[in-house]
Every structure is written in structure tokens, then in C-alpha cells.
Image (cartoon, rainbow, N blue to C red; front, side, top):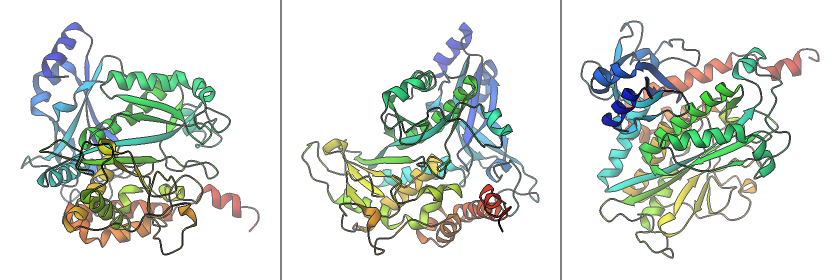
Length: 454
């Protein structure tokens, strides 16, 4: 909606609150709730402030030392939140509420904060535009639904939670009907917030589902992805149930993915640059090959953006529907990269990311790698048919854990060139701190294995 439409809804009493939000490093939506009249009068044009520690905290909101961007020595000052009014919409999952997403700017210079996730993606979009290309994308986001509330889950230590279903529900319409009070509410809320929904369906895990939203220009898609997760959590809270976007919440169940669908479009002619034609029979062209080649060539060094948590790497298991090797194929779900569609719909589906990704960062990684392929004409390896889980060790695999991925990212020349040395330093410290926090933790697996029998 625009300012006039918001003002009319405020005057009618239909909107009284505006949520002003931005993405932190984890992909969480952070921000403030404004009185709608105050937002219209001041914050809509002037923005607001937030503490810069929000781009340096851990999951528990504790300041982490060692960042150059913000620290105790600098006093943890403010940054400026600049509303992107193109994102202003009704938050139809919350009564009387609108929401707007923000870019993060430096308080003194008013330039974008380079380490903010949305800034990183914006820079890659500009890199694509410099090549006369527009990026269109879609996130396929999976999740697990539980009958327990978030408070109950927390009080139970996240143990012995009751899944919303009781057997595998992949495409199962009966199981889907059982959770329709929640998933139906999600579809309606998203559609009402101008986040077009295509479908919802059961997935292979017990209580696992997927909601697919319509593809869009890549920044709009990352925004939709962010708001979708926030809406789904708030709706779950209101219904006394819970959803998780952990990549691997159960050791004996399939993990939750975030398959990325991506295509490039010629800005001048308005055609899919992967085929360079409107014809459904057109073969993939040079831009397609080079983008795929670059995307594949740089996966290992940018893996932290595809798998940003310790848990994410436990999803990569043979026969689990999650890829284990960096290979491509046509319409083959064992491949890390699956080519689907034809003509205008031709696109690359990357099956490597889990549901725990920060959408701004994972799309930025895909673009940085693919555009490097276009510039340098990087050819992809030969396609592999059949079961890629059983491929030889000559086909490279994904990183084994977060520590391995961080080391690759820290040494990546592409990351420094595409994102800047300050971004590489900032996120290396972020992911390294996450890996180190886990290294010192005692897990339930250890207690069950060693408590009595060692």
C-alpha cells in the first residue's frame, strides 16, 4: 500500500500499528511497533533508530566481542532504519497492523551499512543490473508443525513434542486437511498481505509441510520469505501450536529445505536470458551455462550462506532428499542443482539450502557466484544422470560442518571481491562464534550415550 492508502485505513480505524522491521544476521525480523499516526507523521519519511549491536549479537541477544563494526569500545551507538515503502503492506496475520521492511544505514553518513543482509543482496542486484540482467527467484520453504505451543515446547526443553501428524504426509490430502486450520490461515494471511501463495502440501516427514509463494524479483522474494516466516510464527503462536524452520529437527526424519529457484531476465528485451527466447522449445544458452557453472564452482567457499547453523549440516544425508554432492541434472531430485522448466520458465533449482537460511544472504551468495560465472564464462561440469547419492568421490561434496565452511569462506577471494573485505571479516566472526558456541555445549546425544554406559 502507499501512504494515501495507509492514511485512509488509519483514519477508518482499521490500522493502528505499524511494525518497522529489518533482518538481523540470522534472518530474524527485528524492529519496533509504531503508533500508526506517529509513523505517518514522522517515521515514514524520517525513519527510526536501532542499536548497532543488533548486527553483532548471538541467538540469545548477547553482545559478542571481536567485531570491528560495533563493540563496547565504540559504545554501541545507533544505526538508521530507513523504511522501504515498496514493502509497506497490511500484516493480515495481526489485528490492526501494517508492516514495512527497512534498509540499514549509517547514522552519520546515511550510507548503507555494508554488513546488513539487505545491503549485501542489494549490491548483488546492482551487479546483475550492470550486466543488463534482472533476477527472478522463488523460495520453497519447508517446516515442521507441532501441536504444542512455543511456550510448552520451551518448558519441555523442546523434547517429546507432538507432531501435527502421525505418519508421512507427502502429498497426503487427508493429513493436509487435519492441519488446514493452521495452514489455511497461513495461505489466507499471506495472500491478504500481497504475498501471493501458489500451493501448500504435506512433505515426507511426520508433521512436515511446505507453503509455496509466487516467484518475484529477487529482493521482493527475499522480503516475502522474511515476512512469511514471521507471519507463520505469529499465527502459530495465536493458535497455540508451533512451527520450526530448523534444517534438521529430527535425526530420524527428513530435514527441511529452502530450495531456491532462480532465473535471469534480459532487461532490455524482457526475455529469459537463460534461453534468450520466448519459445518453449528454445535450448539453454550461454548465460545459463555460465551462471550455472559459476554457481556450482563457488558453492563450497560460500557454504556458510547456504547452511548457516551447526544443525544445517546434519541435513545432508544420502537418501534423505537433501543433496550431498555438488552436481547438476535435469529434473533429478538427487542433484544439488536441478534444472527445471523450459522456455520462459527455464530456471535453476538449488536444493542445497536448508529452511534456516537468511534469504538475503543466500540469494546474494547465489548471485555473486553465478554472475562471476557469466563474467568469466565458467563452464559447468557435465550433467550427471541417475542416483547422484552413489556418485564417486570425484564429484565434490558439500562441507561436513560449519567449521569447515567458515574456513572456506574466510579464504574466499570471490567473497572479498563480491561482498567486500569488511563483510567477509564480519560474517567469518559471526559463523565462527556460532561454531565455537556449539563446540563447548553438552548435547542430549552425549548424555544418552555416555551417562550410564561409559
